[in-house]
Image (cartoon, rainbow, N blue to C red):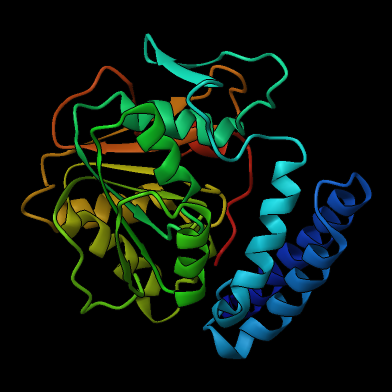
Length: 289
């Protein structure tokens, strides 16, 4: 008798929940997160099962968690780049002041990858408080920036953190199949798609919307164990007349080889081709989402 697929999926989700709780507890003990962030994440993960179709968070309350997350990250990393502290040189971001905290390796790799492309138009999916777009603008002033987020509270945080930044902002649920995003050269996400469930094809809709928007590049920095991104992205590209001939690549951080992102490009790049998902998973078990 075959094993019921739903039973396997529930077992995988239970295992994932236990691992997440252990990770959270360890992070709290090491002061990598605040106690309020710890409580908020547990609360939202319990609520989301009925409210948000299996997503990791209750998005109506996410802004409170997000603000705590910013506090946690700022304990060890620079969140907002000042022009006298960092500089882009030779395709790498160099720290000018030794007393300044390092950028998070995910963020540094993301910025270097985006700024290594010959684009002006850049759209962030799930732009939150706007630090990534602001940092990109600081490092390359001529960028034309766009940001979308599903939360009005997140965009309010964006405007309060970066009132001087001129960015085209819009409230958008990226999982809505009828959404229309602006057409731009490069679209990226940073730790956004990993939180969206596959129920009702919401993850697939999000990817489809992203590739409809991007005319040259898509850059994804995500938790690669949360979805089979390679299969999902390949399917979306094959179904798109604009992206059918596009190529997939991956790039590793020069500080931590475990930190890797995915690049989809209309034109060939001098990066490592992505054909085996293990190049991103690096031994992590793939979890059904």
